[in-house]
Each structure stands twice: as C-alpha cells, then as structure tokens.
Image (cartoon, rainbow, N blue to C red; front, side, top):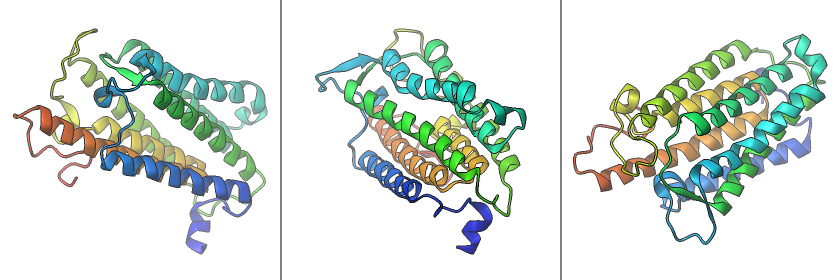
Length: 263
C-alpha cells in the first residue's frame, strides 16, 4: 500500500470509484478473453454478415468516438474553465482526452480506408465504453482535487509517453491507409515502420498513449482502464496475427503480434 501511495492518489477516497475501477477492469478483461478464444468484436477484418443490424464502418466509428469527444469538449468549455489557467492535472487530463478523440475522428474522416461494416450492438458497446472511460477519468480527477498529491509526480513522464504513443499510432495508421484506395476491399500485408516486426504497432502505440494518460492522472481508475485495455489490445493483436497467418501463405513468421521479438 505504501508503494501504491507513492504513485497514486488514495484509491479509498471514493468507494464508488474503487468499485467502478474494479468493474471496469473485469469488464475489459472479459472482452480480452473473448478475443483470445475467437469471439471478436465485429468490426474491421473480423466483421461477419451474421449480425442483423450493422452500420458502414465510417459511420460506426463516428458513433464510437463522437459522444466521448463531445463530453470532453463540454467538460473543457463549461465545467473546469478556472483550472485551465493553471495547467492543473485535471486540465491536462481533459486536454489529452480531447486531443485523443479529435485525432480519432480526424482519422475516421480523412485517413482510414474502410471496406467492411460494423455490428450496431458492438458500435454501441464501444461508444458507451469510451463515454464511460472519458467521464470516469475526468470524475476520478475531480475527486482527487481535494486529496494529497502522490509522493512521486509522473506528469512529465506521462506527457512524454502520451505524445510518443499518439505520434506512433498516427504514423502507422497512415501506413495502413496507403495499402489500398477508397472502396478497395482487398487486404494486404502491412509494410514499413514496426509492421516489419509486429502485426499491430498501432495497438502498441495506443497502449503507450493510454499509459501516458494513466501516469498523468495517477488515479486507480485510469490505471485499471489502461491495464484492461492493454490486455484487450494484446488479445486483438493475437487474433489479427492468426488471421493474417490463415489468409496469407507468404506472411512472415518472424512478425509477432504486438511486442517485437517476444509476442
């Protein structure tokens, strides 16, 4: 506990947040387990036409990100204007979330090339998850305003990781977008960057980005979400590598799922 207190705001200041952190971690853990055993969220290359209700991928992705972006925007404009003058921790967290979802929406509109659809129920689940993540992360930071700061300040390290993660994620999304033109439904083996070593470098950098948010936040909820999300993205990467192995006879076996040379 003493070690945790050095890095985190007290997790016992709010029983609600403690319960929410535990529930969030367990929920994402179930999604991660589902990816490992082949029960995938129905989007991208894992979409199947079995779902009765579905959306075009671009519309579905906007549904996933717009509510969370709207909440972060409202929060920054109306809820915490006085904190924005002092670059407080809650200002940083709100800003990082706002930038994250703005980037996601920008990529949906101008970067990604979509060929499949997304099951409506999975789009709604993802949208609600991002909305809850955004609201709960901001709320956890609000609760921490009246608490003693952790002994070790990780904001600088968190900001560095955040920008490394967001830049690496964007770069590899650009590489993916260059694989095909709009409307082209053929999948190809990605090349360039860390695609030479792992199947999902964009997921790896997303984990780095979320880790940066957790280090800036230094709340139990943010840490629980990051660990849960990392497990989900590892599971998704594992499934993606298996998909490439099944579809391409010339897929290079040395290319791992998400961690170069390891997994």
